[in-house]
Amino acid sequence: MYGFIWRHLPGNAWIKALLSIVLALAAVYVLFQYVFPWAEPLLPFNDVTVDNQ
Amino acid sequence: MSVRVVVRTFSELCLTVGTVIVLFVVYVLFWTGVKADTAMDDQIAQLRGQWARGSAAGPGEPGSPGTARRKPAAYRDGRPFAVMYIPRLGFTWNKPVLEGTRTKTLTKGLGHYARTARLGERGNFAVAGHRRTYGDPFKDFPRLRPGDRVVLTDGTTWFTYRIDTRPYRTLPGDTAVVAPVPRRSGYTREGRYLTLTTCEPEWGHSHRLIVWAHLDETQPVEAGKPEALRR
Image (cartoon, rainbow over all chains, first blue to last red):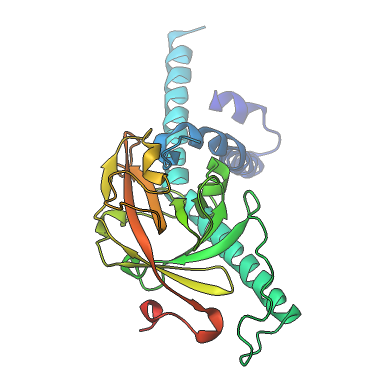
């Protein structure tokens, strides 16, 4: 999977490395900004009321 | 497709899932706290700004107490209206209190149960807060003891409540704990009460922890900080 991505990135090894880092950071950003905020309320830490709002 | 490719892809997937899980733990334990601290500071700054503008509109002349205080506006859902101080949880512990107990609201501060009494009024002013995650506001909730003071201000008045019970453990559906005369609180007649609720155990949701307090004293903000907040 990662080998496939690496082979399809353009440029020489340095550019590929740089692009990989950018891609990884983008993935982390999407996770923290969109995926985790959606997933976190599914955990029990939000249940602090007695009327279960 | 060779076995090698299958095995490699599978192990890469496992590594990826593992990394995502670690990142999620970082998010829950650390990042929600960072976000909540910023959000809470922001809410408090908003309130202070509002109060500063309010007092600029009608400066509190010291010589004329009770000069036509405007009738308090209704609390607006999801908006802050007070700041809470609990010296037992730390001398610098202060959190904004927002209207409503929606999940979204509770990420920005403590939440006032919308159907309960207003701050300082007759009835039960009930507030919920996170025990863990989102800045851990009620992390030290079990350390609250009878006699501890809970101080709130709405910009015009300081309200000092005094805790009467040790943290009481109950089930999540026990709405009677936020009733005007809360069950199991030991109060027998109507009064000006405060209820704090959070989750129990610390990382779970099987129970709730409750403490009750009664209004001990009030003083206008012009009179300075209440004694509980002075060092």
